[in-house]
Length: 460
Image (tube, rainbow, N blue to C red; front, side, top):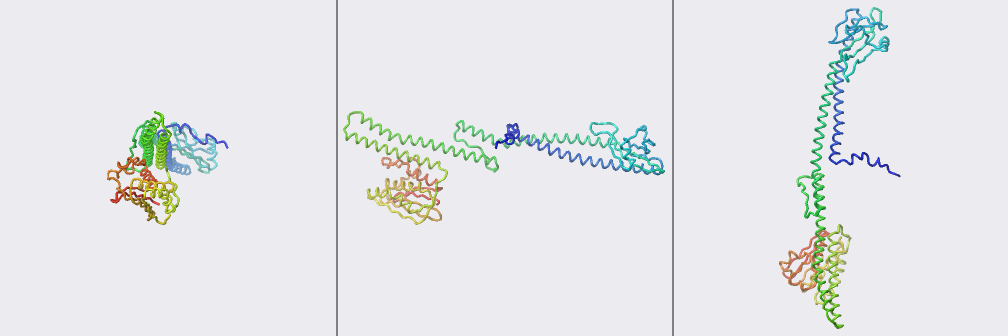
């Protein structure tokens, strides 16, 4: 079914206005309606009070005229500026105020209605525009001496109309000033409310222009929609900064660590091409190059794994048997330990843990590889579960971590001086810490005095 653009986008001109202009216009329209309703109510109440007083005076005056006509006596004087008139059934003027000069106040239709017993009420002249001789009259039939008479009483509306016109002017002035004040307050309030948004926009624009370490100034003593927006933007900026920092570190680490094997490969190939080589020498050169290529592959895989862990939003947690998980991680290292004449012991609790085995298994393998590569003696792995917390501990009987190395043991490419000439890329413990952080846990390295110890604590 075809959609109607007009139904989806009412008032397109309004949507094109700035937000402040739309807010001020909405306030002005709303206040106009409220003021108009209030002014109308006040005007109606005052008009009703004035009309009630005027009608009471007119009714009293007419009753006194009716009584005087019935008694065939002298007509009494009425309120200041009042008029009176007595007509017969044919409309001839019998008695009249001097100001009327014999002119009938009733139209033929009104005269006929009054002759048939109806009470006639009518205003002469209008409130606006201003007219002279504004009256309110009331007429009715009276019997005097067996003859029908039409008695007309009229009072002037000048004071009533003047009061209403003054009221209209005062209401218009007060409403106009109130509308201007409300619009001004609405404008200043909208500007003040949107000023942080504009500041946040400027900050985001600065980030787009290449600003570094950008943080939005969000008040700490407030908790409204604007401050929550600021905290959300700061969180987003932190994520962007962390992403940029990971990218920078990835490029820097990769360029730093890849340079050495690539340089060695280039040197081996240059030597091989510099002069004729025997088959044995070429084979040895190829083996050396193959070793460096394998090192490049392992280094690239480790960097990519770290990057994937750093950017993953959620782990694929699943119930996993702890003994099977640890057994699968330990198995590849048993032959290495046997070849070096060392022992790997495992003490695992019988439990099911909610972890991502895809990442935790290689993390345990890295701990074992690190202990076998840089430690000595028996390698012990214990895995316990207590109150939904998994604790993994790998210890060895070597010389332990140098004291100056412990604070940076989990940094990328961090290696103790004594192990710099050995194998490894320095990414093993960094990977372990990344896995722990992704699970919401922690990793720490300790020197027990009888060797090194690395502990993982993970909620499960």
